[in-house]
Length: 142
Image 1: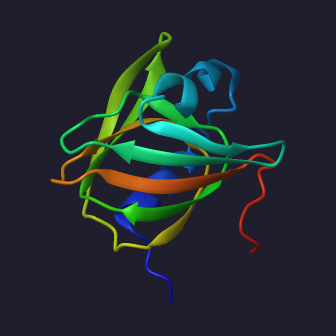
Image 2 (image 1 turned 180 degrees about the vertical axis):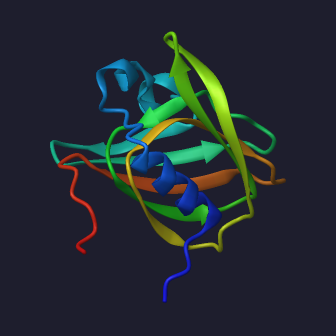
């Protein structure tokens, strides 16, 4: 049996709410545009976008969204705070904070598309992960 992490559960519940960056009002919040210092494009083509996600110790990344489902590989995990936002009158309003412990090094998670959120690194080292976004929206087979 696969045990879901706190972060994966948060992301899946956020995805289930329909908070997806592909929605027109969230397009400007795409991770690469809204939080470029923490999202480096390593590869992009018509089918995938590969991002290196990096957050310095103590830093809170800017609010952003991910419009496609993805696979995330935790290269240098740290304990994080996952902050969920919603748009109210066109402005992001904090809705929920989820404290998550550091994932094991090498942990790999399936993630649905994510609505507005930000991550704060509560650790003492940089948080580093690789995220492979599936532009065709393909998800895990059921």
